[in-house]
Length: 600
Ligand code: PEP
Ligand code: MG
Image 1 (cartoon, rainbow, N blue to C red):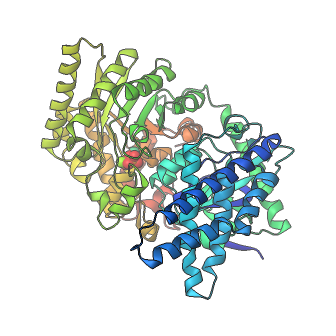
Image 2 (cartoon, protein in one colour):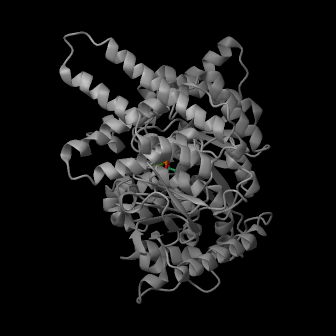
Image 3 (cartoon, rainbow, N blue to C red):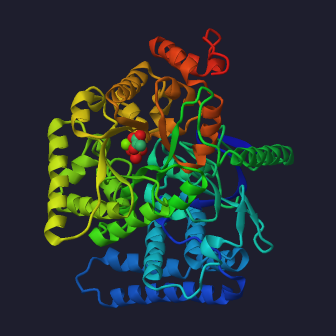
């Protein structure tokens, strides 16, 4: 029976595929297709891991001291029994042999199926055995992690099973897959970046949660905040992810499928049309040049940035180099190599590297998130606060960035500053990092220094910021979060997360105006920059530098080519003074709206 689940639209397009349910704790297992000729090898690998865990538990059992609690021995018995469970064993074989999933993926998939059966059990004791099954599966996965797979993925990240706007073109595996999860951490999301999923949906998350941002950067349809999607959708269900409307359609009828197939093709045509703008400079009708920059998470993303026609990187979220490593932070050389790769990848175009911004919905690893759940991490030790609290870590990063600047134009951007003391400490750290490199005779290059404006206090202290910094970059995602006191990752207050709130627009407008007046650089690097609904307003406010995920660049460029910046500035002043700016920005939303001037 067809039903729909509503969430938040975060990444455009339509994906149609079979559901792969992934629990967040198992989201970081490798997901790839194996060569069908290696099926037996992969089944053997799964069996060897299971046997090894069984041996380990048996040994534990034998070594139990005589005074060990009775329950412990009984628990180990249950674990051994679960390891022999026929449904687990045959299920894993099925996913490997029939779908060519790698062993880890097959095990995680089968776990989800059995776990659901446990959830449905009336008997409380049996229901609770789900936790035991989970532990057993985690043990097997851990064992497999320590033992490299002899079976290689088919091509890079399942290439050969090429994704064509959501469709897997392959003769053995002709079914596209969509990932459904309760939550996916940004680090796990990054893992899926190279993966074979045609779309994503999660129960939790807001439009500008980092999970949503990474999904968008992958340019595949995604819906977050779909509440109970991972409970309602079952493994292997057919699902349509409508990333434009923020809706999931489960078990669609043939008529619905045909309709969405049509929409999917329309989307493809639109992309092809936009592609023709790739080499067109972004200039408004009245001749205003606009700089379109890319937001990236990893050095490899520079390939996509250059392909999309970005004229530089406006935001390299360096924290993604630090995440998902179980606290093992990258050292100076590893960071230097990564930053250098990004600089070289941009082929002479400038790269803005933001110092690490972990915390809140970007924990270093999943454990942190669990530990933080009772705090208010968005207001806690995040971004520059984290860096200043750990000087050796911060200095290491600063040295690596300065060294990378010897290879091209680098801008160093500092997140979440609010206080004069933080600014001065940061400046002292940068001086210290330079002095250390001087002492060692290590080459490094010049950098322009920038600050993110993402806390209202910063937007209200522009003169102080501009005294120290060469440029400012407005992080609207956080600026909205902190101005309106709305957790950007919390879907239950997502309806109040309003980029068009007069207070937000005022802070953005004043920041742009002050920088322009002082001849300092200013850009917007939050999601607002990639939202075509906001392009004209930002142009009207005087913004000439936008930084966004590469997948948004051409659509924003199209808006710029059609705009008259002079006329828009008059209109933007009206918008700023309006009681309900959204009604002017999106005229369709209100019958009393003042239309955007013609040709603007
Ligand atoms: C922002 O806050 O707008 C921003 C660009 O930073 P991040 O999304 O990484 O917090
Ligand atoms: Mg931010």
